[in-house]
Image (cartoon, rainbow, N blue to C red; front, side):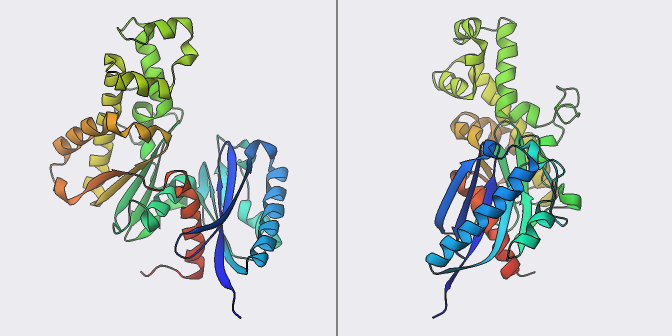
Length: 327
């Protein structure tokens, strides 16, 4: 009797490595997880991947499954054609790491590698909030701002895997210097880490806020969750911070929509859980700036897949090696 088939999907983050067996409909059949810190260097990381993947293959055999391919999602700058991670600030073991050339001789399936934000977009397009929208942008809001583009129903990686980096689109040419070296990137205005820093800077200057006493006692206690609570209690500084996030996103999204004619933008990542606090200023700014595109022809929605989006996107990447999407 013929076996059922699945692919192996991996989502490697700064804190945890998660992998799963996934069906051709995007259903997670079984999943596993381990701490990224347990793989402190490149040799340990690659040897762990091989060992865990082979163990997963044995488990798949017990489940009556044939693994057809594997898709791997990692943070940082990825060269998908070469299967190499050029730079990964959150997982130093991945810096200059030849992931696919190292793993391919040791594993029995075709392997593909992509940036995790790209796979967030691909997962949401496949079975999430982007379904039915072949021209789509996915944006992840967290410590930084990531992005992934779906054009004509396919992931668009661009030259050397650099497409979709909306977090480093210039919004304020005279703004703060980003970690990338540019000034006024979207990331400096709309990410969780930079928004927290903006609030701390305002508190240090004496801006009135219910957070002032907390800041004086323990500046480290001011974090993204604190800002969300304060904003929902109508703290003026916290509300202004989220208005700033919304406006910056509105400018950036209008730019991309004017350029590419997108019909759907999906917002995910931990910081996007404050959707209710920045959604209105985002839409107001977007509608003000969409002068050459009908606003009714596009929509911005929260992600549907939560923390599973990258894993499901990695599965979709793997399935595309088995059955390439139609041109």
